[in-house]
Amino acid sequence: MPPDASQPDPTPPVHPGQADPEGYVKGNSVVQSAPLVPEIRLHLADERAPLWHKTQRDLYDDGIVLPFWAFAWAGGQALARFILDDPSRVRGKRVLDFASGSGLAAIAAMMAGARSALAVDIDPLAETAALMNAIENGVILETSTADMVGQSLEDFDLILAGDICYEQSVAERVHGWLHREAALGREVLIGDPGRTFLPRGALEQVTAYGVKSARDLDDTDVRNACVWRFTGA
Image 1 (cartoon, helix red, strand yellow):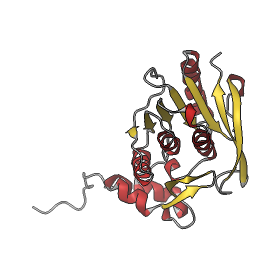
Image 2 (image 1 turned 135 degrees about the vertical axis):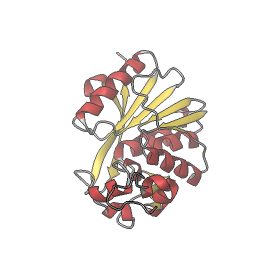
Image 3 (image 1 turned 120 degrees about the vertical axis):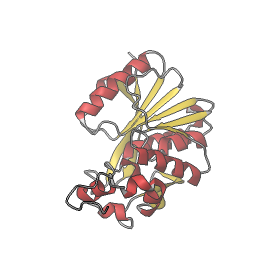
């Protein structure tokens, strides 16, 4: 019996970003280096990539959330540069790259001699991008899409978190957790260009860099990207 065309199709649509995540990342990005870390190659979106020109509706139709994984944000670049310039910070350590996006900081950690690096991001496409970027740079990452906020981080020696201060609710939820972990003796480094919701009272600045960024994404072409450390107090 033929299907009743008047009834809605019970089969959920298969979105491109979900059906073939590797193909989606590859087809919507260009392999290139971010300004501050030329030694690392990433699948990133720029004017040459279809993703750059997609609207919110296009992303919805593709079945994806905001593609933070497709950009090397200023804070992540600062963390990666800091690690590569001072490998002793990560050598032999178990590293967590929280809200990892492209996996940039985790990749830098492995290139600098970390024992292991776990790239965590709740976006499945970010996990795919991080794994693809790791292959591009000849390193091995562990990945997860778990929501780790509130969990104990006793299995890690160093926690990296780049560009997590873009929204007040997110910043407040995450910073209380990371501050508690720092108070337990774990080193927590934040990469951020000084956004409004950065909890400066609980942080000390470690270093700063000038990072070029796209005007469409940030307020200026060059932002003062900093590495901050939770004091643990």
